[in-house]
Length: 223
Image 1 (cartoon, helix red, strand yellow):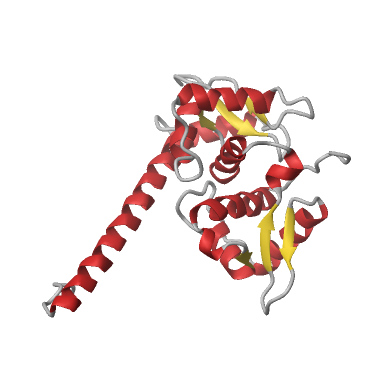
Image 2 (tube, rainbow, N blue to C red):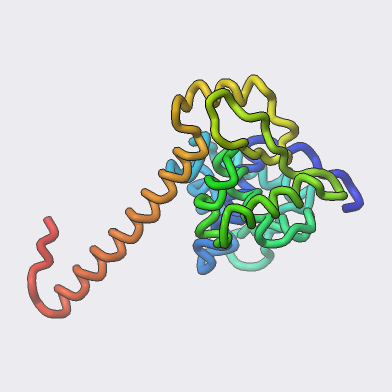
């Protein structure tokens, strides 16, 4: 990169992470409109922390990311749409982009938690594959994009954090550990992601049953 990457705010990383996530998970609606992007930033699943960003705040974050070439705006059509440019600007492969996305959306996580969190973005064969890409991001010649955090008291594994918003403070890590109790926030995020995925599959199955019952002319049993 010719210019150093600016330090991103929490909302800017949320916007950028949401764009990468939605490109992989809902490609039919990508690039995203401002309304869809606001909803994605504020969703209550697979997000840590949960936000309530306004359209104006998200638009301001988009404008800042556009100046850094991390976001591009589609021309034409009645509604503006936005797409990320993360892989090209940072010059990272799709696997690394998936890991950065999970860290931007859900905060510091262990390699095992990241493998689960990235399931819909990229399926890593095993934890060692995750660790390999994390090591590459940490030793990147153009500047590290992730860092391995000091192990917390009682933790079995080290967590990783992205560096797009600067180096995480020890105070923030300690507060997160105290708030999480025996279960880390990364583990909570992974569990929430699995619950959200299962809820989505259940909703699809219910819709399928309702459609089949309608075609057969029998009651679906839906209250």
